[in-house]
Image (cartoon, rainbow, N blue to C red; front, side, top):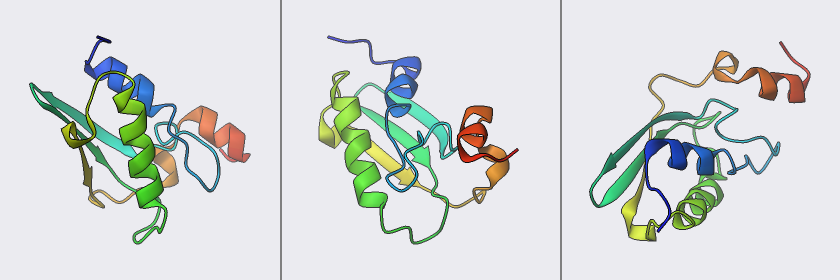
Length: 102
């Protein structure tokens, strides 16, 4: 079984792309936290805009990627929050460079 720790989860989340701009949700600064307990992982995240219609695609991709390190779909909880609201300052330097800003 693959290692199921916070570092492994974050590494897999780096493979989840925002469907509109094809930049990792980690590089966009959408991941606010990861909480692991014995039978589940909770990913606290936000979106660039409230009401983003692509959340179901992103959630599906998160569950697919985390399945690769041994989590069952029902063990992955997505905690969507808008507090604090996302801003461009949360983006990594890599994401800013890809978008030509910063």
